[in-house]
Image 1: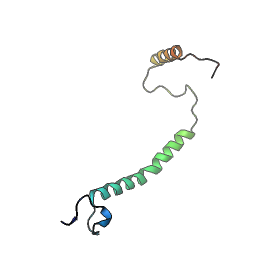
Image 2: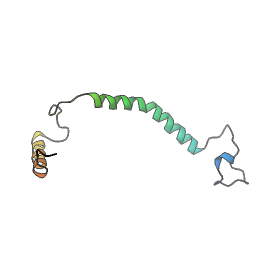
Image 3: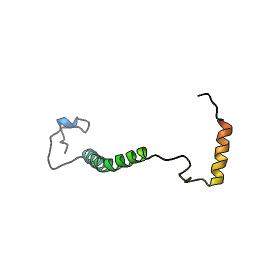
Image 4: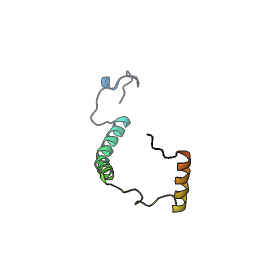
Amino acid sequence: MISPAQSPSEPVASRPVDSQTMTRRDAIKRAALFLGVAISPSLLTGALHAATTPVAPGTVPPAFLSAKQLETVAALAERILPRTDTP
């Protein structure tokens, strides 16, 4: 802990190290590192699988819109940004 001669703003490196104490900041850093290491492989596997799985257009059903609503959105998008031959 901090002795009376040390101020809380004093660099951590100059404070005495006690092997039995851990600061809140150290605990949060370690927990974040542990969770990051534990979660990363599954996230990377899922992202790589999703990125490499080919999906044909029109084969995935709309998740939030009905077929009629999807047609309406497509018509509005065509009206706002019409298709052209120029890039």
